[in-house]
Image (cartoon, rainbow, N blue to C red):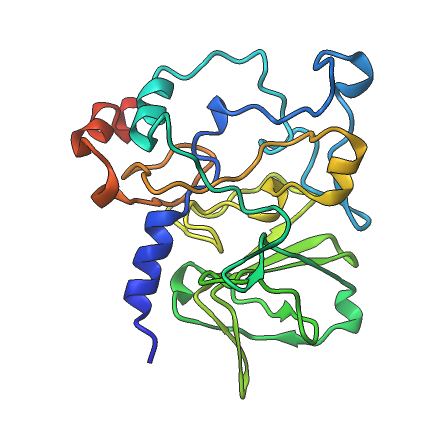
Length: 256
């Protein structure tokens, strides 16, 4: 029987989405990053749907914003010489494909399921349109990401598994891709920071165009024991952070 507390502890310790969004610029794969033809374009699309509105935090250029005063401290706590984990790539690792795949469906033509969550209090009840043999992340987190192009809704599941009665998962979140609405304060999602996963991944189609117009998601071993907007949930890993007191130098009540 799965030890869900252990799984969630690992999940929380390893996952941080873009809590550091204000310090990270969307990567541009062009020679001239100021080229007028590449600035201010519409948000990327998945199928026929936007990946959130153009003014969403995922899609807002930050090249002209000041560096956050805690930027150096955050980077040093992670480890300035350490790599961080991007949840995309090519090839295989540990016997399975690298990256987090996604599914594009027509909700009207796809069977919907009421998913059995082991964190139901912070999960959207659904139902979730899950195709037969869905693309699912290889490895321990087992994310399933689904875009319903009928109404441009994003469904994301963490630790999803098929059962004799349908589907079970650790947690789940549903997002309107035409809205900037956030999760309720304090709620997780399929990501421990309470953010959507899909808009932060690098996809082949956008790389092929030569430009990525959004922030990129990454995970790291060392994360704070608080969160800042637009995150909604603590993705704490304090056991791996040295010195632990670092994170208390800029607590949430200071106005983040």
